[in-house]
Amino acid sequence: MSNVTVCARFRPLSSKENRDDGVCVRAIDSETFVFQDDKDDEFTFNLDRVFYQDSAQASIYDFLALPIVTDAVNAINGTIITYGQTGAGKTYSMEGPGIQDCDEHKKGLLPRVVDGMFDQITSSKDFASYTVKLSMVEIYMEKVRDLLDLSKGNIQIKENKTQGILLSGVTEVPVSDSTEALQLLCTGLANRAVGETQMNMSSSRSHCAYLFTIQQDSVTDKRVKTGKLILVDLAGSEKADKTGAEGKVLDEAKTINKSLSALGNVINALTSGSSSKVNHIPYRDSKLTRILQDALGGNSRMALLCCCSPSNSNASETLSTLRFGMRAKHIKASPRASEVKSAKTQEEPCSVTKDEKCGRVLDKMKERMSKEDIKMLEEVFIQEGIIFSLDSMEEVETGYKDIVSETIKSLEQTLEELQLKVKKLEAENKSIKEQALRKQESAAVGKMSRFISSWYASFFTS
Image 1 (cartoon, one colour):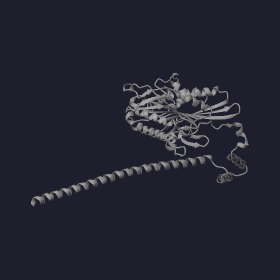
Image 2 (image 1 turned 90 degrees about the vertical axis):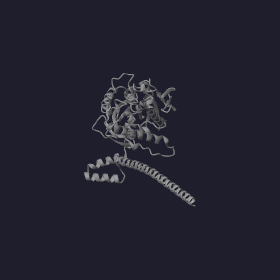
Image 3 (image 1 turned 120 degrees about the vertical axis):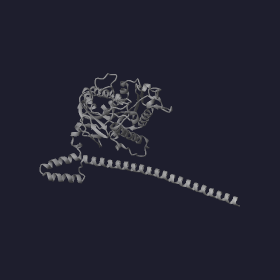
Image 4 (image 1 turned 30 degrees about the vertical axis):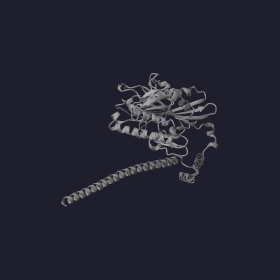
């Protein structure tokens, strides 16, 4: 098992931040730094690598992304995520100033990953042929939208036991080289939801995921290997008082923050449970965590780039980002090569599944039997458990998990409501007791006062 690779990147101060009083970060070395919060408390952070204000884009790619790209080409799934508050430099780190026609020194992770992936594929002598397919989606207002086909505005997320998490019906475009891939990425990025806030002129209003599927046929043994590479540019966490968000932009910010909170809850559940106890991992609480389920807790290498502002004015948000990274660093991953299949073996009768065999029998019977008889026979096969529909079984399993998840959420909400009612009743009870005590004290004082008055009156009259 291996840990998630976690790095921090501090962007240069903006023109607005330069007018503020100082920075909150003091460098120690390439892995360690001291952070000072707005209360002057100091914290020492140690990560896999720290990229300071003068760090080059290429150095981030070489350390963070290159090992994952190499593994993806060799059929080990990989995921790269940029995380941080809005305006912290996530999209610049991921894309650079632009996907195409960009200065070599300013190119972001995405174009470098594309170039590196095709360089490794084409230079390899172990593969006779390869296929690279590209998909792009964004999670906007808790809907998964296909950025390469805007008519697909609500992609469904499904799970397959052999392939893991799948986006049902998403557009997959074969690309032959980096130029074609980058042109397609530009088309998709033009469809991404963005908006203006006081902290960012072009703020991402959605989480964006770039998905590459790499399939290669071996020269020597006719084996097929498939690796998946996912890059995720998360929308930034926001505080309404800083961004000045209103109306639709505020609703977007609430949805973004909610999904980021769900991501934090998943990471907490993955890292806080004991090895002897199976904890509930709330992957289904958001579309973001559902898509990242394999990367967070399954068969995938993962790297997280925490993008931060070094300014004192953003100290609380920076500290939150760094603590998120430190938690993620404790996630245990089990990356392994995907199932390798031989084309020759697939053609052999011994590898044919029971469903396929039954299907062949039914096909032969169709030549002599009516459609009604074949349909009835197929239903009998399914009822007797001789064959089954994989799609229907997956839908039942998915539906069951959804019901369990909804039930847990409902119970948690009910528990919160009960806790609030208990607190309210305790407060009311305390108030009633205080009122009763005051009345008792007032009555005692009144009684004493009347006694004293009566005593004085009797004393003087006597």
